[in-house]
Length: 501
Ligand code: HEM
Ligand SMILES: *[C@@H]1O[C@H](CO)[C@@H](O)[C@H](O)[C@H]1NC(C)=O
Figure 1 (cartoon, rainbow, N blue to C red):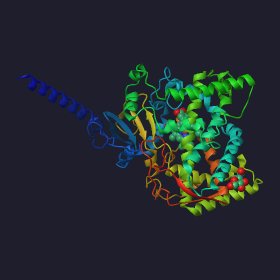
Figure 2: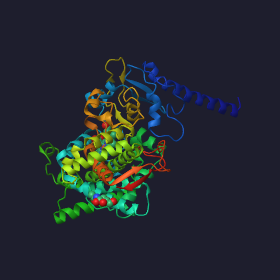
Figure 3: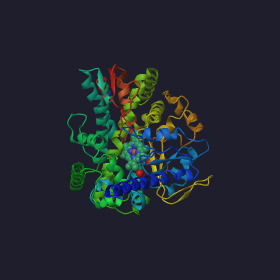
Figure 4: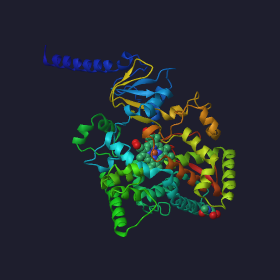
């Protein structure tokens, strides 16, 4: 044989080997008797082209088999679980949590201290931070921060009044992001970031950078999670150096200013500083020891990242549905007026608790548009799935398709209809506890859910009391979602017509 033939044989042999190895891989679920979709080499069940994460799991969820706990799928060569049964989901998130407390995200604390935050950390580090910080999110602490959030809502109100002097149709997405940026800036960093008052706030600019321009593309993200040890050896980061310098500097200044001048405030930073100095926030946290400066910075950072975009999109989609459903909007406004008149016109903590219809509206908005469209867990050990012969192997990722569950007509009839009455106490009780998961569930659910809900309620109540919202020619009907964003967002902004009442 000549050299070219040898070379060709070699290439053909190599390609065949690769194909055979993929075919073998793609038999993983079939060999275990688990239903799965046909996988294509080399992407498995990942769709080609630009799509939103929910479009990766939604087609898989829709093939669910009655009685089966989950569907098998392949992300590239990796077998993953897409949960389809609510009892199974309850096992993963709550009952067998000890087997699923990890997310398996990439962290590199050495080169990139801000990556070491509660959302991404696993194991003992996560457990210890979660226990230390849980006392900062109790309803008592929310009551404490309530007046601070109302102050920011008043600024939102006056900023909007100013804008409406010259415009009547408005892109509200930016305005709402500035509101939640100021709230979390004040409550987590203890600074007035003034993004509502000035259009060029540094804080707001860094906030949009995190979501609009991620440091790495999808391939690098995949590499980091698939080969975390190698990635760490190559000093691969998650947060850019520029963002790190900004946030670390901010936290350093805030802490030293407060310690030097003995400043105490009603915010997360105050609680974080007390933890750093070994003060106990309650009986339990005392035994857990201190947190370091880097740990404080990373947690304040994740409060910001996890807090502002999720809450502002929640408010955004709520205003959208209220504009499209004027009767629901009027009913909410009547409730707000009646209850405020009981409290002498003052928006107090108790007044907000009494506005149950507003809360139902927010829940229905979180159902139809859950900002976090999927939940992720990773098996810490081999897990024999109850009621089956199947074992989920250690290290397997479990995806819980929240968006698909919230839009499943068997769980929520006529899922595209916006109906706050789905969230009366009777209706909630009639459903499976895992059918509504906007904040996740179990010991690793959203730590900021009370704060997020409080912020949405205060913001929306203030807006609905003073302004009427309706669709205009640029309002996106039907809704199209932006691709490749970690948080559900409209593709073309959100234009609404707004009138002062
Ligand atoms: C409407 C607003 C919000 C929504 C929809 C939301 C949603 C979520 C979801 C779905 C998770 C994952 C839960 C799971 O895997 O079971 C999560 C985790 C988390 N959220 Fe939120 N969130 C919101 C607001 C906030 C706020 C305001 C903060 C902070 C002040 C926050 C901080 C966190 C943190 C730190 C985690 C990670 C918890 C852990 O792994 O232990 N979130 N959030
Ligand atoms: C909100 O702004 C309107 C003017 O658009 C004003 O009449 C109202 O008093 C303001 N409310 C608060 C709470 O600041």
